[in-house]
Amino acid sequence: MRHQCRVPKLGRPTDQRKAMLRGLTTQLIREGRVTTTKARAKALRDEAERMITLAKNGSLASRRRAIGYIYDKQLVHALFDKAQDRYGDRQGGYTRIIRTVPRRGDNAEMAIIELV
Image 1 (tube, rainbow, N blue to C red):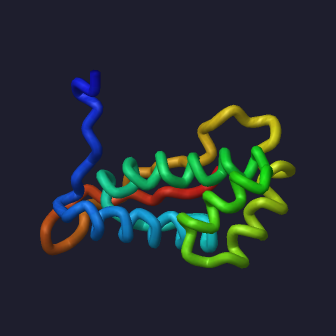
Image 2: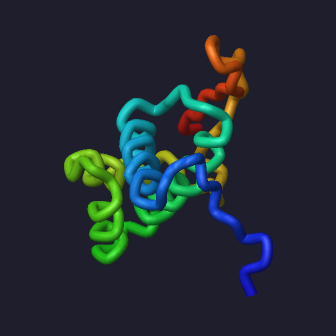
């Protein structure tokens, strides 16, 4: 049963939400840190950690799944090359969320999510 296993909706339809999370994941892996709202950062954490876990696995099937999710193919190859060295001894917890000042205008809770 899926009781209380809700996906954070983030105020968007499913296709827009998935595209936004794919874009944020790509940006996080490329830049190393992203400033966004706290709710988006928490949703992004799951996707980013899933991609890093795939990269640690390193199989061809994992690489193909990551290429299907991350927008930049060269970024996927770079992630797979360095993930085992960087996160080999770590069992999850590849990202860190740091709360920052509220956004001016709508007072939304902001956060910085970064790779550890």
